[in-house]
Amino acid sequence: MHIGIISIINIAAFSDYLDVKQDVSDIKCFSATSVETLVLGLLKFGHKVTIFSTAKGIKKKRCIQGGNLTIYFTPFPYITGIRFFAPLIVPIKIRQMVYRHIKGIDIFHTHWSHYLPIKTTIPQIVTLRDWAKIILKMQHWYQPLMVGQRLMYSLMESIVLHSSKINLVANSSYIHNLILQKTGRDVPIIPNAVEQRFILNTEKESPETFRIISVSASNDKRKNIYTLLKAYKLFREKHNNCELVLVGSPFTNNNPTIQKWNNSNLLDGVILAGKCSHDETLNLIENSSVLVHPSLEESFGNTLIEAMAKKTPVIGGEHSGAVPFVLQQGKAGCLCDITSPKKICQAIEKILTDSHYTQSIVDFAYSEVKQKYTQDVITEKTINLYNTLLQK
Image 1 (cartoon, one colour):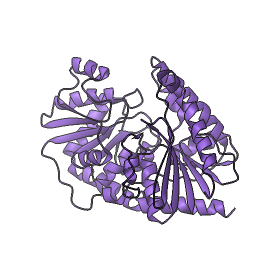
Image 2 (spheres, rainbow, N blue to C red):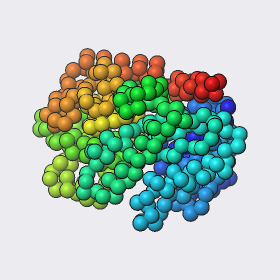
Image 3 (cartoon, one colour):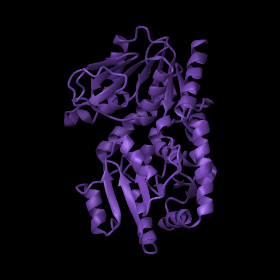
Image 4 (tube, one colour):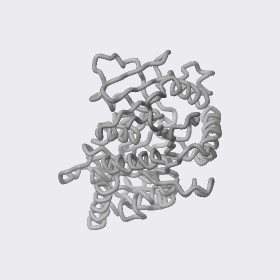
């Protein structure tokens, strides 16, 4: 089968498949772990994949190839004024690129609702990996650039949701229910996956210092890191042998928000790891005592299943979108009121002091990953969907 994928991707994930002679140092990719894991699974199963994506650092279209994999990149707008309209410009450029290279593709699978439908008879799938209107409502209104772009994403999402040519897929029951409420369509659920190599197959070693970790690519209202810091401050009042590691590009000393928090004495005992590679992040998660995911809303939460695969207990929000779905209503992780520093602190203390409870959620979570979220399981589900649509 020849599958066309439309999504942001990180080219580094496919280094084993691409021609090593090709210079890709100028291609500054975005990243989408859930999509990259699926594509690697499709390649592993012997399918041909063509990816249509966008990247910074390039001023003209690029094509990178190797074996059954071809990746086409269109430049991400780099001029400040034009960059504001990237949510509209990039989908148009990608669709133009698709039309030039559509020959031989059996099925298209787009990830996120940010891209325009293709005018073709070839079956099209869109996996919704967030809900743009909810994210828009949680955006800080003093950030006009982000608000404007989220409005554009909401517009694109409306087009996708109401296109009769598109087969929608949800990555969680949370997104499934939102689609059902909005469109009346009962769509299949195919969750995110974790690569087999990231699943810990040995006993987990506990760090000497009680290490709390939180991973976030952004630091906005929705991610709720400020509340975690207040919870951690409460926790440190009772427990000295601990540290909080914040992983993600916003968590650096030169970030204005971080400087403000530092001046408010919220960063005592906090390690700012900053942006890390995916492998480095998973290594940090494996060597932590607990992962706290304070996000107010998630469509899935890849970090959750990655921690579960590393036998690291997880704390998440009881009303945070898909988090209860992933954590099996508290069987695979500790759910709490993530808006309350006191409740987060109590949840962390429970992980620290109640070893029987902690081991029970870790064991259940690890079993969930092995049964439901491995790369092979999710790839097979996706291929089965492709075959069903191609047989119609």
